[in-house]
Length: 317
Ligand SMILES: [Zn+2]
Ligand SMILES: [Zn+2]
Image (cartoon, rainbow, N blue to C red):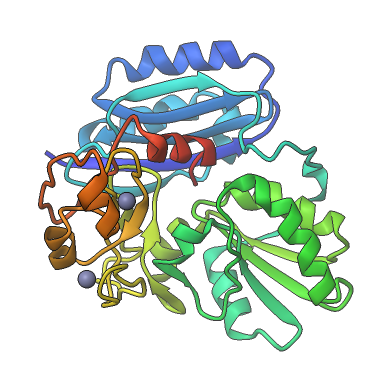
């Protein structure tokens, strides 16, 4: 059985979120589906998986409502549902920034192809910023990107302030990207608020870029907020740019520390994971409440513990 993993969002006023949620629930209940869909008065953010045979039915369902015309639905393929269940919920904010965002003042959207051209033609007055969290850019990034050491969405406004001290906002061209594009919708107005005049954002994010342009100028892999954790952005196998926490060799495989009180998300090669029973450090092996280590090629994130909470807080994409 094969599955499609879909990611899309729409930033636009939702007059009746409860109604949209109800319609989605009723329709998806009929399909083989899983995922996370969040609806707020400011839009919808959806990451879900469907049996391949159900994809067209869902796309047709979206087509019936012109609200979804603005959705750029990105599709990957996987051998199973990368989500444990289907969650469709209302949220106050789509992106937990805790600050007002002026969507009328966003950056200019670039198609994957335009983005590639801009990257190729960049000069010394152009900066590329990876607006994702640190554990995401650790396994993959665009060549020459600034990778801020952020742990959550909420830290971005502060980073934007710091950036204006280092780069003259009037002279600097900003190219920004994230996983699927939604974070840039929230962050580009913040950059403009800080005075940056020329702000461009990659429409559809790294996912769309990989589908259309392959991995040209991209190094490594892509972190995703589901059971897959890390995927190739293009058909070709992508290089490993991350490093094993234990031995330093190249690896893009994330593990949650097997010590349930730690649960740290860390990179490890398979051999070190075996040797350390899935733990992040010596102390965790010796002192922790260690759950049995299962030796898998694609370890899944451990659920119902801080890491899962953290994924939820970050919101995904
Ligand atoms: Zn290792
Ligand atoms: Zn640990």
